[in-house]
Image 1: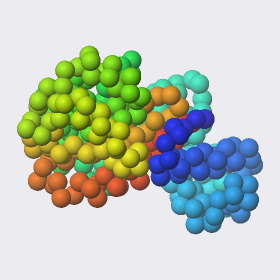
Image 2: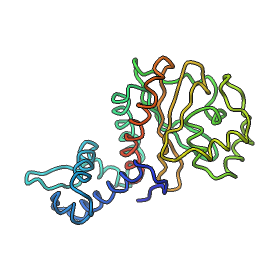
Image 3: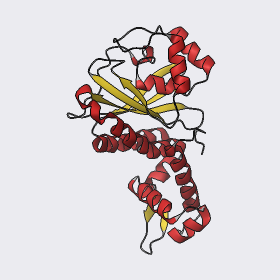
Length: 252
């Protein structure tokens, strides 16, 4: 199991959750929270919050005597047979729940073979997805998704991407100067969500946070109609906190 080395709060939480899962997996007959605390070195409050999340996500179950055992979701993701489908279903359940708690459309995006791909989306009547009026693959410079993904690449990979995709002006707010964009990407802290304030499309604001596991670059994002822009920063903070179970699913 491997996670990105960025010092984000979701990264640390997922890292701690992995320690808990690995400890539970070593005790097929179950392990108590007291023993989990001793073996993982986690404080009671931290461990309690992680176990609550792991139970909600189906990674652990609590048996009659109060001990914790591996849950069904952990078994499905840990199996080589059908893992890809199990992972997709688990991620969809997680972002559907996040959509409802944040009140925004939620996206999982990956940087694959030099291109931006939105791989999954959770939307609904009250949380419509952004209208992809310009292909996301060619508008990374303008979108929160694209900037989050580019921000996780090294300088040469960023320049390579921008050399293949012209930085077109999509709105009056779009950055079209490569040097300025690269400077903004360099200055973006890994722990702070990337924002798109009508840079991709008039009428839409977005936020994205990294969810890189291993060598695969990814991000979790949300979009809101501009009339809900006052909710963006709070929604982005909730999105950041909600990244932990997504990171965990990718890392198992």
